[in-house]
Length: 246
Image (cartoon, rainbow, N blue to C red; front, side, top):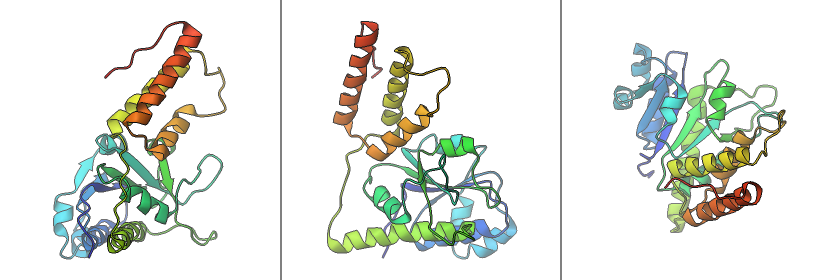
């Protein structure tokens, strides 16, 4: 029996087709997920029809004007995408995603699903340091929105069940999203202050560092060492240390 997964938030960005949201509400109820966030409009009548015995998820769905607002209180965010490419690397499979989510039981994690027509914009994707991809027929890789949510929710629930049956619970003592953002900002400020960035960069260092930290999931000790390391870089180049807001 799946356990409550109230800390895992499903986020739909501007869903278009009537019925998808209702089907998703029913799926989330099947696997004991409790929170649905929607960037865009209120569900339509058809959504309530398909959300049989799960109407409370639609009634309690939180609406946001944009993805940034929908993710601001979350510790980690993972985007689901069918697109592959040099500038759109895939960080994890669905099974790896489930393991990642399971290993951070103290954190709020958002799973982000884009529009049925064209997914997420580049700006929206950049708000999600990690990307998960469902391996499918390369000639027809697009998976229906409700089915994609079903696959993701089932993967998490089944992984949790396997671990529970084995009697184990791996916990990673990772810092919160706010602390992760703080060390990220500090690293960027140090790099900028010592003249690391070139006039015409070929690497998006902001995206790279966000992804690196999200994959590393540092604990407080690791954050302290990163802060110490970058402070020394600043001393070596500028002759003085750089403060770190506590």
